[in-house]
Image (cartoon, rainbow, N blue to C red; front, top):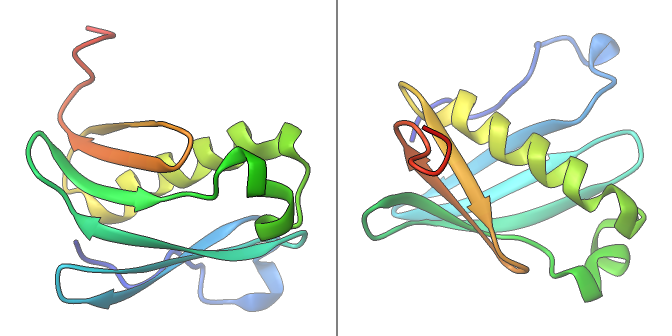
Length: 113
């Protein structure tokens, strides 16, 4: 994984959600920030076929950990998955998630091809 941050470089123009990464060997932390919320998620390199697993806030703890309504969870997780792929993969990728883990994969999603 590369690129330490997803940022325009000008804080005055950054009003939407952003991801920042802190790498620590085979894992690290993804920092999500938006005007409404900020929270951290761990990540680690995964076993094949996934590339990376990300620990996401479970739905029962979502509001407490993220300070956002549960109704926004899917939208925020969609942003996180798409942005990690843009920031960290050198080609196409896809993601899926359970209640507490998001997995990032390289290539095209075999379920949609």
